Image (cartoon, rainbow, N blue to C red; front, top):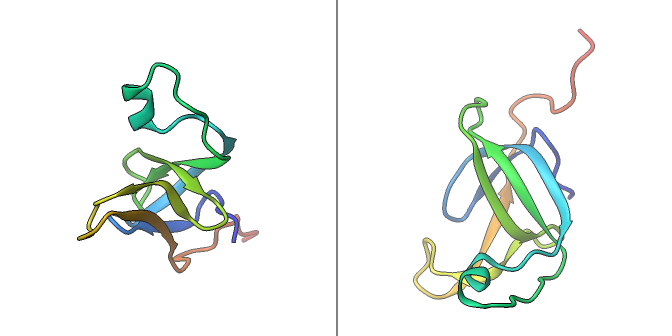
Length: 102
């Protein structure tokens, strides 16, 4: 399922969040590589999400997730006992995503 503005998601380490915008087809390097390498390699195409709390407050960003698998490109220990990939979970819709006519 393609992620879209208005959807509710959470990650394995935080959430829930409402998607405010999706940036697709980015190939920017991983943050850890940018900080530790002079010429960091580009990454496979991935998405970055601009998020808010479900009620629309707050501004949060997550990135470097594969949109097909909803899995991160980098392994971490976030809320895990072993090194593994973070992931996004799509939550049930709490209200219509598209505007209603009435």
